[in-house]
Length: 539
Ligand code: PEP
Ligand code: MG
Image (cartoon, rainbow, N blue to C red):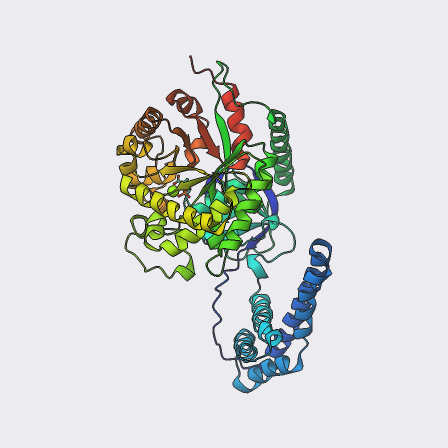
């Protein structure tokens, strides 16, 4: 069976299909007539969960050592706990309810009981009971934990994936993303590019496909379910050819980003977190042009502390060993929703309370991040960048807050560097006042994803409008020209960190416009370098 969708990243993936298990899977109460059969279902699930935990224990033992692996042993023991097991079985028997409901309910009760105890050790067990109950519910619902129902890497299918769900996936287990909804410019698509795996959207896949064999063709935007042997062989060969092309690109490592006529440009990488630094280095990027720091907030259950952020920024700066690392301050709102911020539901979130607007309003959050950034600046070559700017007065406010943060650090005797500061140009307003903005900052980085959305008045998240969301629109290209000119007039260097920066059909245009930097997904670095090296801007 072949289903056509739309590709958001090319490449070929061959593997088993697995449907993403939404974390918020609702547990419904249903009446059961054969309670003994339901208890047997529960017993089978308990055995399966124990097996999973034994596997996790072995894996953790090798990867993170005995002390850290011990938690999986504790969980196995908890699954043997008689009070817990009997409570579930009694509930199924006496209340004639389904096993999922009995497990979830018992889990909640036990966890509340532990949480109310005085002993710290017992208190901590509250989260463990919740964890094992969730695992049991997932097994009963026929899905694995952490969103993926398999120990092998799989082609992951989902209705849609929010950025917060995508960041929490075990990346080593995902060969490809395939979603029913979503748009080319969503952050999930961007993450797929960062991970360098083929991804499709708009694929209306059938329900009963768990565990079937599949091929994702990210060049033609289609998925083949249950392929014949000959198709499998054909795609295996295509994949080998692709891998060979990638190997050839590797030869460009260590080479300069220089055109045939001698123009040089900085080629940096976009990342979402510390773990992406490995692929930045593997692809020989000259620096990091966009660290989307909001992913630290998306991965977290609550506001990341100054210390947690400091460690993350410092690690990235140190691993990049003196190369430029541009960290963008918190850019949440719109599709990047963070539960604990308790943001109001808005009619037009893309035009709403988001990014720098939140930071200038909730300065406590902003200052915590700035303190962490300045502290980390001491350990490498960090630049700080601010998103969604619309006016000079915002930049002035930011600079006042930076002054306060620096004064606090001075007073505490904490060392920091005078990091370069820059802004994202991603609103038409910023473009129009870019000459004035250039007087205030050290650099501009154009966020073409949002700039296209706001210029064309097209929601980047709306799949229905994907075909008219056109970053090549003359309005966008004229703005790009204007930004470069205005930036340079006042000594700002200018770059592009939106997805358009990796569009090799425009590399020559960007070079001619005078862009100093392009920041692209790590997986695109060598392709863009190849294009630069084969371009003659005199022609
Ligand atoms: C952009 O808008 O182009 C950009 C780089 O930021 P984000 O995609 O995270 O909104
Ligand atoms: Mg943006």
